[in-house]
Structure formats: structure tokens, C-alpha cells
Image (cartoon, rainbow over all chains, first blue to last red; front, side):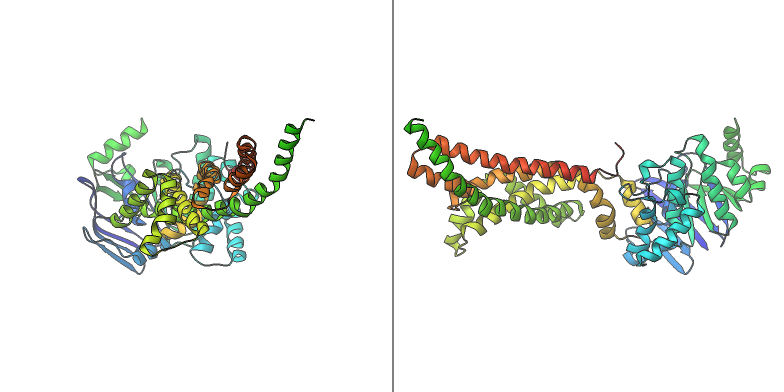
Length: 247
Length: 225
């Protein structure tokens, strides 16, 4: 589904990603872990071009994008890639002037050109799926953080993306609200959604991930099935990181 | 009642309708048309400034610099009395509309630019992540939120504009203030007439303040207080 080859990203003279190679298979859940500043969020944002990689290549389904320094992407390439991906943000980023329902309908109507009736039906069905059918007409500020994030997931799903990207989706939540969001994500993973998740929730990584990728200093240090990365850790840096977490 | 009081009362009563009529026929339309056109200019200038395009942004900067840096009355004189000497003769009303539109456009562009910049980066990113283009994100997500921020300062501009339209009297437009001047010329009661004109301006601005309150309410309905 996704093929990343030798991806680099620099901000001015700050070299954040230093040649990332990564594969995500169709229906797989890949969890990216790593210390803050390791480049994991930048990598995720490169996958839907909120950041444009400096060099390297990215394949997603039938799309093949190659990045060359100083040469901006064509607009239609950027839009095409974004239509195949959905993004869930750490701070939800719901549209505050729209109800939950309208948040889910907006992209469908404006971007995909669906009729309002069709968009509405899809939106209601997704809100039901994330357990918020009764909150359809509420505005974001009337919802708890966990509810807002579930709307955020449903909003991304409404566009029928091939891949869902999660940028630390539970980091801004009160601890007691984390579970409801992770449950929705786990359900999606089990239904065969392709997902790339940046998170600090190691239990989620252990239970749900098909592959765990440890990133540090802008490179992939170690990757593999969770039992291998967590129980049979190969690299010293990975061990140090995991040790610090369990303290 | 003595004769003097009776005379002043007559002047007040007799001049009220002509003054109000001039206000409704010229002052209000002049303000409304200039403000509507000015907002369009302001939005375009703000977007030019935000575009990141050096040429567009430079043109917008230059325009704001000229208009803000020179007196409105002088601008009106240049348009109405000056342009005919290069063969461009405009009536008083079109001249005034152009002058006030440019003024609203310049001050308004700074208000709109600030309002757009006040919207969190995450809103743009969320819009892009559902596949929107720049103009879709602007139209559907950013402008509706920026409007709420821009309403109070824009209402301020509008109220200033209503009062500034009195400058059009100097380019022969028979708006409210000019009519007050004309009646004064025949009655020799400047205190009465100009005070009466002031009261009518006050009525117009007060109505606008109410409209502002209503708009602010409307746009902040969905926002956590």
C-alpha cells in the first residue's frame, strides 16, 4: 500500500529525516514509536504532504511521487495523495463553526462533490460507528476531548481514504478518555483499515500493531512485529527507549 | 413663547426632513456602496499580502501605504478636482464612492489580514487533510472563522465611514452635511443646523452599533465563551 524510499526532510539546515525506508502493507497497522524530536511526526506529516519531503520517493496505491530539492510538487499530485489519506490530529482540529455532523459532511460535499443527502447519510453512519450518533448536532466545544477525537477519526473516514494517519491521537486527552479513542482505532484496525499511528501508547502497539517501527535521530533504528521489537529487542537504542518508558 | 424661540423651533422642524432626506438619499447609499466595494478590495489586498508572492504583496503594501498615509479629503480633491485635468471627469457621487472605497479597502485589508492570521494553523491543516485546495480551505473553513474576529473592527470602520461621508460635501455632493450648510446660508443659524446634522449622524451610527451587536452575537453562537 505504502512504499517509502530514502526519504529526507530538512527545515533550513535542520536535517530531520535522514533516509527513511518503510513499507506499509494493505490492511496493516503500523505503529511508529520514538523519543520526541526523533522525526516520527514529521514522517507522518510527509505521508499526506503537510510537509513536503526534501528528497526520496513515496508510493501510495497507484500514485508514485518523487521529491527533488527545490522542485515543488504539482498541485494535482498533492491533492491526489491527500484524497487517499485521512489524518487524525493530536489536537483534533475539528472545524469549530460546524456541528459534528457538518464536520463529517464538509469534505464529502466540498471535495468529493457528494450530494448533501448522501454525505449526511454517510456521516450519520460513521458517527454511529464511533458511538456518537446522539451528538451529531453538537458543536466541538460542547464535546469532551475523547468525543472530539472520535469525531476527528470519523471525519477522516468520511472521505473513504486508503490509509488513515494518526498523529499522537491520545496525547492531548485526559487519561480516562484515552480508552474510548483507542477502542475505536482498534476496531478500525480489526476491520482491515490500513493505518499508520504515531503514539506513546505501548499497550496499543503491542495489542494492535502488525509492525512496530522505532525511529530515532531521523532514521529507522529497528522494526518488526511487536513481540520481536518489544520482547526480542535487537538494538541498544531501542532498549534504552523502552526501558525509560516502563519506569 | 417669544419670537426667537418660535423661529428656531420652526427652523429645526422645517429642516429636519430635508436633512434626513439628504442622509437617506446620499449619505447612507454612499456609505453602503463604498463599504461593500471596499470590503472586496480589502479582501483582495489582504489575500495579496498573505499570498507569499512578492509582486502581489508589494502592490498591496504600496496601496495601503499611499491611502493610509494621505488625508482622505486630499484624496477626494485629487479624484474630483484633479483628474479632470488629465481628461477624467467624474461626478461628485462616483468620485466619492471611489475615494471612500479605496479608504475602506486599505484600512479593511489590515483588519482582514490580521483576522485570517489569527486562525490556528491546525484549521488549514485539517482542511488540507480532507483534500481541500487553498481556496476551498479559505472559503469554507478560514473565512467563516475569521469573520467573527473581524466584525468588531470592521463595524468600527463602517461607523467612521458614515461620519467621513460628510467630507463629500467639499466636493459638491448634496449629502446631509452639505444640505445643513445650504440651510445655514439662508437662515444664519449655524449652531442649530450643525447640531441637528450631528444628531442625525448620531442616529445612523447608533443603528449601526445595534447591527454590530447583532452580528457579533450571530457569529459567536458556536464558540465556547
